[in-house]
Image (cartoon, rainbow, N blue to C red; front, side, top):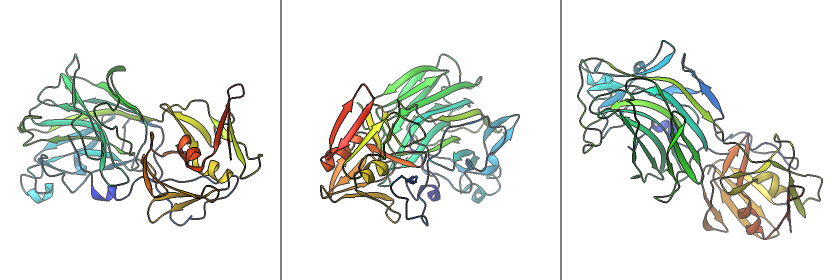
Amino acid sequence: MKHKLRATLLTSIAAVMFAASPFTAMAEEAAQPEALGTTFEDSLDQKDTDRWYASNGWSNGGTFLSGWRDDHVVFQDGKLKLLIDDKPCAEDKALCSDKPYASGEYSTTQRYGYGKFEVRMKAVKGDGVVTGFFTYGADSDGKADEIDIEILGKNTTQFETNYFTKGVGMHSTIIPLGFDAADDFHDYAFEWAPDSIKWYVDGKLVHTEDGSRGALPSAPGYILANMWPATKTNGWANEYVYPGTTQIAEVDRIAYTLPKRQPGTSVDPALPKGQSVSLMIRDEREPAVFKLGQTEMAPLRFLMEGLNATVQWDAAKHQIVVRDAVSKSEMIFKAGSNVAYVNGKKLVMKSAVWLENGVAYVPLLVLTETIGAKLTRDEATHQVKISR
């Protein structure tokens, strides 16, 4: 089911923060772009206001029968509790965004890219109730990407996987659980990579999407957990029936883990500037070539400036502009997007621009083929050399 976040959370796509390279430092310090979130594990004993935000004072509209209220996000007994009830809506609907019910939603303040997303939770049983854990973020063109785990109260012995790319969904799959998700806590997760999304239940792989049913998401997204009452869903969730007492979904743990990199390589600054750059296995703390799926990703600024090209951050347009005088090429990239523009022509890359530790990575072949550079490999030394 497609979701809508508070508008203030969606005003800009996660953009790139560059670390200074051996060749030059970033000049535009006044307008720092947004950084992506990194690995964390939260046991949810209490609210972490640096990482999380409780939705408050608005509604998604449409099929949602509730307004979000931050007093319906409660920390008790070492757990996060998401509530649905008619308090204080029964007295004044305006207090619930003109909806008959109030409910809780908990969202990260940062976006997160490829990696593993985990939740340990207990869902709620009942017609029209949806207990969800998902990511949601806009691509560079403002259209939404989303990856879902949803448990429908009408049948809590199964859960539903889904994903949306640029607002296009219809990739739903129903997975039998073999237990009742409303009876106890269980672990649910999805692992998101450029070429796949894999869903897990209690550590067991239960479903995989490889893009054969539609392009996979590429835009980084906020991590959310929520529960809400549904209406007019054409039988998807059934019509919500309020039982007269507060309904409570419980979440015991949420975690995110960055994907493991394959052996890293770094730029050797000792080589003549503008002629060639070698990428070799070195300290992982340095900018490095690594793989996302089957795509080799190269540190954009470090590599291109090593070949005497210029790299600039355009804060107004939230984009990275690379100009190479030798090949007379211009490349434009946006963080989190797999769409680039090369000499004014649109190029769909195999992987989106990836951010890690303040460095932007772009598919290596996009860079080398655009500027006409030669790429040679030395398997014995695990070295890649890019030369004019």
